[in-house]
Image (cartoon, rainbow, N blue to C red):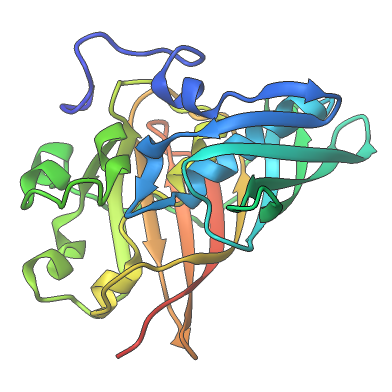
Length: 284
């Protein structure tokens, strides 16, 4: 059990993550939510948390419950507070259902502002065959007690990274040069990952896991916010109980944009999720 987890472990369906991603159906395909300030970085709501919020709405709106592929375009920065999600069923098949959704908030004059637009396909992960043919290998991360989390660094500025209080992150020391003022320049980030209250991972929380680590831009020697432009996640199977291992790499930064390719592995050494995102960076 992760050191950061509470003495009483939360369970799937009864945790802070579940409460903070819960949506209320207003009408068929329309959902209300109050975006929690607990999942913010600086003042913006984390993109992975937002994807999980939309993922929960899709699970209600579509005839299938499990995300297979979710592609999101982040149009404007979301803020804590009220939001509305509108979904449409594009196609409902026997094995896959596809839907589209947008999350809206309100400006100072009460007008709707679209924050995110998403296209997703859902299915039944438990119905997939067991046949696996892969050359992928789990990332080599030191044991958890040899890795470091936010609690091992200097105290953050109040309100600057509320999300870290809700996560169990233990980062590979070889990807922490940026924290010591000596970034490696390799564009890599690896970490053990879990929720701080001990809740095990499920397909919905995998949408958070791919976007919860410090940005690879830090190891490239860059500082500041790295906003996501587009994020696509593929969920490959239901994760086994226990902490996940997340590996993220960047191979190309050009024109002020970089890609981040993430892999998420469970305790059974299975690749349970993959993602690619395009993000903007501040140069100079």
